[in-house]
Length: 204
Image (tube, rainbow, N blue to C red; front, side, top):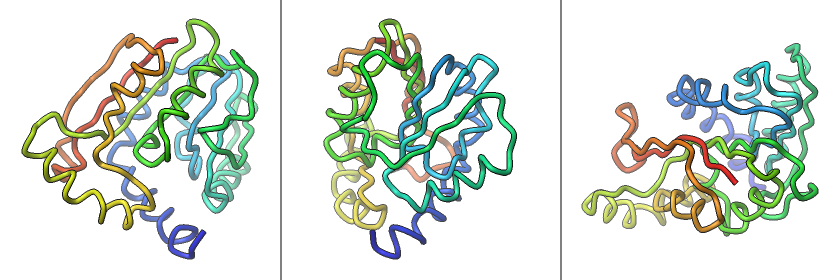
């Protein structure tokens, strides 16, 4: 990792995602049982889990972010065990059907080969298990989408691999998930090219 990726960008991401924090908090109340969080980052979501959660396992590719997350865990008292580790969503080191819920919030924009990560989520979920997701995606409006495609190469470099042209809704469907609930909207507090959001629950 470069100094920018390791030290500067995590701070930027933590500030940027505060815009979505309340909505993500409401959504994460639906996670239950043994939970796998993809892209646990600095641990910002850990305080949002409900009493229905028995354990949280978080993976994150950036070790510097996990250092902050470990600090969050050390300072706060949680009613469930938490394990945080460096990991790749495309090759999860967990058994088949070993989680009740998977959480993916603002991560599928960045994962290389996201179809592999979606397939891995499907593999580690128990039958009937759920993915709780909140992701920014490609716009359904042709004019906005055209600008997303123009800006995406520069944005990818500035945002450490983040893509603003991902069709994550279809990605989850191709992985074998069906939607228990889904919202597709443009966030009013985000610039138009990053405003398209999908959120909800997908079921195995």
